[in-house]
Image 1 (cartoon, helix red, strand yellow):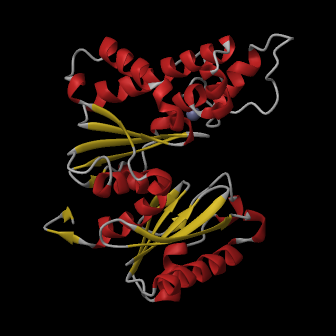
Image 2 (image 1 turned 90 degrees about the vertical axis):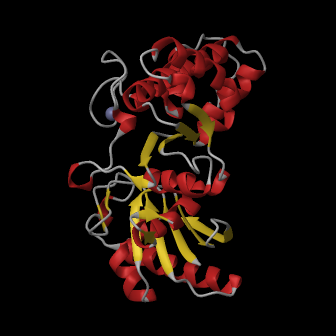
Length: 313
Ligand SMILES: [Zn+2]
């Protein structure tokens, strides 16, 4: 039984995950970055104890997926936009000390990629790319069951690969990154920039709401969905051309409306990836559902510690 911790910008979730990747209990609370790291650590420890008590087990290890950047091998939190004052704090070392078990941490997209690769839609795929599309675009690459890392164990920032240099300004300072064109806020920003004076749905626009309006036949929302298909499709086509993976697994809040996007995405891939066997790349949805991040956090522990002959078990 592994304790799982998912540290996000707005909430921290904790759970107990069994050896088959089943989430046995889940608790969550708002992140409250202004409350300080020590308070958050106390809450994580208390939630882990409570979850373990309710399931009636003791945890034998703890896996963490955290919004990044994080340093997986030192356990330190980097310069995270959501909680800048936590920089340099070390939840791996601290939870090891509190629970006296081994602890491993990865970027949350990498954690979710490992979860889907081990227990979800990417099971038995040799070359898997996991992409989550929500308020940003995160991705993780798993090759032969092992996480792909860059130099200095860096997490590749696929959401910031360039699609259109004349595109909108991105949070990274560049223009036209995939995330700036195809994450949920990009849909809202584009539609808002196109609003006619008499548009009747201007309140509370979100990517989800735009998708609902498109289903109702709203012309501008349909255009926003078409634009989303185009930019999502271009980024995914780039991944197919660059990696020719066995599967790309899609997740995130925008992908809850995947039925509006998938056919169009597949057409763009077919048009632009003819030098690789694109038809062999499965474009599929994450199968662990709402709990992908938490189950992935548990898989981080297995990936780091439970290895047999170099392969993740
Ligand atoms: Zn960027």
